[in-house]
Length: 320
Ligand code: FAQ
Image 1 (cartoon, helix red, strand yellow):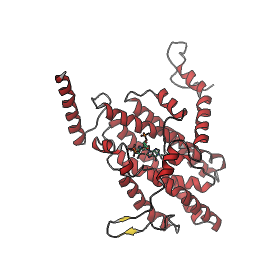
Image 2: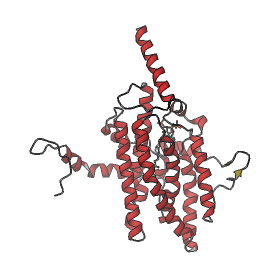
Image 3: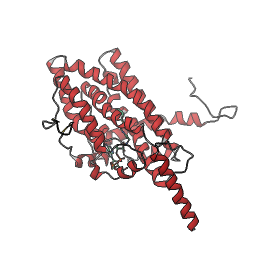
Image 4: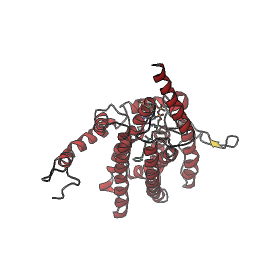
């Protein structure tokens, strides 16, 4: 028993030494149970965010102004679906069945990014999601590309590459509006005003309120704290907003010469708590749409699971 306990201790010491040297942990490797659980929690929430994240912008596909805007928006939304697939696969390598993750999302038990529970009433929202939300996502994911868990870190590299295109498509929409008619410029400013605080909340609660950060940082699941990531995003985006002649919605957001960073007003953390626990403006609508899509896709899953005449499962969806 003592020997067994010692062996576990040795395994942990070896694991921590490996992670400390910056080596990657791979699916078959020994890992502490708490490391596995924290990763499953985070990666599955991330996967759900990509899937639900298709909805606020996806709504605008039929109304995109012109063929080229429609094409790029369709491509972006499809990319998010692909990111969800990559991330569910990464979580599966840790032993979590995909069906369980789906059930947790559809039953409302699972969390996903706060930001996708806000409405998109105008075309400017599509631009501002691509520009602001994807920039915040990329800042965080560039950090996560250094994660100690190999499959997650590798997925992040691919995802960041595609998200860089999303930022450009969002920025391009906002530039057109900001330099367009006064009404279009107002529409862009209004969208920035509405998305500012939800986007700041994306990086998670302040470090003192964060439950998982300490362990995640110790085992290099994350390599920066929530506040470091948020600050990096603000320092990057504020000059971009001002360069477009737009206002940063926080009047106290000023560059502080002594710290070399922008100061900013803290978001309403009680609002974050409410939104991620199911009580945001669009939570019910988003989950209802996901449940409907899941039901409508049932025949595809069943067709894929049905053995063909030669006894194999279908490898691709029949086209007729
Ligand atoms: N939203 O202890 P911490 C994207 C939860 S991808 C929802 O600080 P942690 C692409 C947290 O889960 C966006 N829940 O947690 C795209 C925990 O709950 P639990 C998604 C949040 O994990 C763009 C509790 O609060 N990105 O946008 C949030 O150390 C455009 C305590 O918090 C990722 O998921 C929040 N904002 O740090 C797609 C990246 N903040 O599990 C479509 C991976 C906190 O105890 C269109 N995840 N919570 O019940 C992460 O980096 C981290 O999980 C954080 C939170 C930073 C989100």
